[in-house]
Structure formats: C-alpha cells, structure tokens
Length: 290
Length: 278
Image (cartoon, rainbow over all chains, first blue to last red; front, side, top):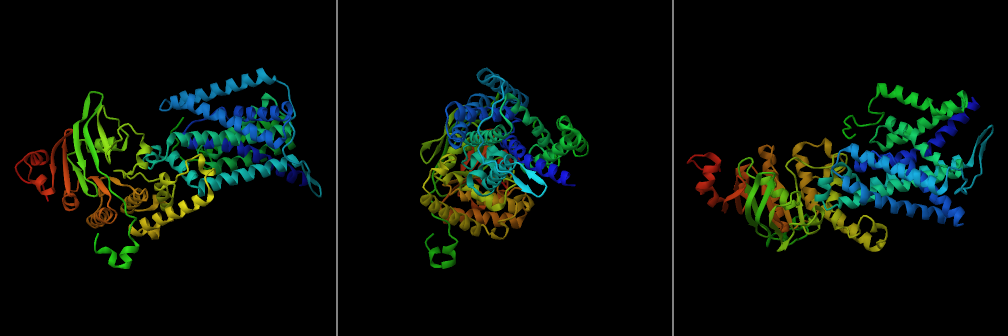
C-alpha cells in the first residue's frame, strides 16, 4: 500500500510539469488554431539557453531564467511574424508542416552547438526532500509541481479576470468580431505565441535541472501529446487533468512493470479511452481544424 | 435634449455625452472577381442623426457595411469618418476612431458572460496596449478602470439588462442577445454606430423595444446611427434619412416621405405602381 501511495504521489506530482507543457500546446491551439509540433523543441531550446547562461556565462540561476525567457520570447515573436503570419489563411496542414520544420531546425541547431551530451544545469529550486513516515518525495519533484501549479493558477486568473486575457479569449473564439471591437488581432496572436513559448521554457528548465539536459528532452513532449489528445485538444482544464492522469499511470507502470513500460502503458491507456471518447475527456465535439 | 435634465432618474441613466461624427462613403467600387457588388456608391450619414440603408436582397447593403467596417477593401472610392479618410485603416484601428457595429447574425462571444462581452467593448479605450499593460502606472490605470466600470454600468442600466449580466450569453433568448450586442457596441462609446438588421427576426414587441433603444441612444448620446433593416415600418418611423440601394447602386435618398414616393424605389420593391408599405 505504501508503495502504491508513493508511486501515485510521485506520478501525479511529476504530471504537474507535463501539464505545463500541455498548457504551452493548448494555448497555441486554442488561441491560433495551430497544432504546434515544435512544443518539445522550444522547451528544449529554452533549457539550453538556461544552461548556457548559468554554466557558460556563470550567471545566477534566476538571472539565467530571465535571460532564457527573454531569448525564447524574442524567437517566438520572429517565428510568428516571419513564418506564421505569411501562412495565415493557408491550409492547417501547411502551418503544421511549418511547425515541424521549425522543430527540426531547433533540434539540428541545438545538436550543432551543444552536441548530444547530457548536461546538468544548476537547479532553480532547493532540493530538500519531503518525508512522510515511509514515503519520500524528492525536493525537485515537489518544487517542479509547486512552480507548475502557481503558473497554471496564474494563467487561469489571467484569462478569467484581466482585460487582456478576456481579449485573448475573444480573439480565439471570433477574430473578426474581436477586431471590430478594437482588438489588434496580430498583437493578440503574437502575445499568444510569446506566452506559450514562455510556459514551455519554464517546463524545459524544470525538467532539465532535475533530470538532466540533452536533445532527448524534446521527447518529453511526446507523452504530453497523449495527454492533450486525451484531455481534448481545445480544453486547458482537460489537458491539465489528463497530464496528471498520464503522470500517474506512467509512475505506476514504471513502479510495478519496470522502467521500459512507462513509455508504452500511457499510450495504451490513451488508445483505450479514445475508443470510447473520441473527442477526449473534455474536448468539444466539433473540432474542425486539422 | 433640453428638458431631460430636469428629472434626476432620467439624468442618472443618461449615457456620457458624445459627439456624433459624420460618416460618408464616396464613389465606392467593390468587386468580387467579375461581380461589381458596389458600383460607385456615395451617400452620407449626418452627425447625430439616424440614417437607414434599405434595398432588396442582394442590393449591396451588407457590402456597404463591411466596407465601412474594413472587412472589404474597395477597388476605388473612399470611406470618410468625421472628415478623415479611413479607407485603408485596419479593422481594429477604426474602433479607436469611434466606429462600432453590430452584426446581422449576432456575433457575441458565447463562452463569455454578458458582462465580459460588454467589457470587451471598452477594450480599445484602455490606453495600455496588450504588452504595455504592466508598464502603465497603476494609479492612472485604476482611474481608467473606474471610468470604464461607470460606462459599463450605465450601458447595462440603459438597456435594462442588469438582471442577466452574469449569465453566459449562449443561454439568452434571441431578442436579449441582440440587446447585449447593442450594449457591447455602446460600451465602445462610439461616435458612429452601425446596426446591421437590429430587429431581424424579432416579434412586434421586441422590435418596438429595440426601436426605442436606438432612438434613445441617438437622442441622449448624440451618436450618429447608420442602420440596415428590412422592417420598413421601423425604418420609416425612426430614420431621418433613408438611402435606397439596388444592384449595388444608390437609386434614391432623402427623408422617409420622399423615399416612399420615389418612383424608382416603388419599382425596385414591387415592380409595380403601388406604394412602399408603411
């Protein structure tokens, strides 16, 4: 029983970072209709920026974090302006291919600059573990979950209560009407890409500073795709719940069936659920894009 | 205007005074491929008055509206707002110049509440842009928010939708949705208000309510109103000027009485010698 509780806690807590990655993806999908296959690579690149700033330029972790965020935000602005805006109005597949192209470029660029080695960037958060009698929760897992929870709560508040957040929701649901209300649609799309890239970067840095940094980090987004499909492509709440669920299933699979199974079992679970709920647990039934 | 300030209650629900701007389209040509949707259309809406655009289906009424809003860019001709050429201005920049509109098929945000929809109407008046929102002085920002809340409250009182302000718009009946859309447009504090078929699909009672609201908006706020409408009785009752389009051309314009008697209008509507239904 203790074992089960420990695996479950670990799994659900590590699902928090996955939820951040899912948020990065769903923000773009809801806000712009683009299925962004570069989420994992953006996250990885942000983590490399952080690594370069802390280790190569010897900055304090917080300064390095800010620098990485700024760098990624600037890239997001360029990508939106130079690649996506000219593609607006083109078929969804063309835009999707552009994001895959972007992912390849980032991947290649990272390997060219940093190679394929695994690095250990300095941690952002203290690593004091939490111990309840027999159960030990590593500090990194706990810290990552806390950061993810705070960020996600912040996003919910932003979209619910601020006029900019409401304007972004309006733009997502009906850009033409939003424009007649005086909302600058291009600015809204740009802001959406920036926010998504920032969330992804934070997730990347959290993972890299607890589990190590290599180009494989981008693959972390794979199990997140499973979570997103399970939650329903267009539901932020769904993506979060599904991320926690997948994190939990992964941890149980790894604990009871051995480490290799964690890469397989979640997808089996997703397939089974999708057979019964093809639009995901929380998804809208009428997804027409893609 | 003159006698209304006497009663306190009327004064309280009064909207902040605005100056209606003149709106004019000047020799506008609009083509879709080989089709000339608008053929050199020129007319004007006088400041602070209600002007109606009427015409049979396919006459180009909605094309005129969409050109004024900025959805369509005309091949030639100009759209003038308060004497300024806005033909090439992006859609969102027209809101900042005082232009607001409603849509024939209600364009509310269904996932949002009535109040959130109305708040969006005030979005362009926030001086802080999307990115500079945080850089803006909190004190000035609070003042601005208070001002916005005041406008929102007055608009909500004015259109008598206070009881539904926290409901999601999707659950509201059609007539109320139309009213919420008007409220959102008013929350933009427009100087020119475009109404695309404001009473389409409404019953007699709802139509009368809406006509009363439109008249009140024009009288109490001094807004210039341009509307497209099929309900001829309503158009003739509230408009001070009527412009008639047919096959993308202006075939008549003038007071309701002049237009009613205009032989070209009678021809276009009925193809016969009887009068336009009043």
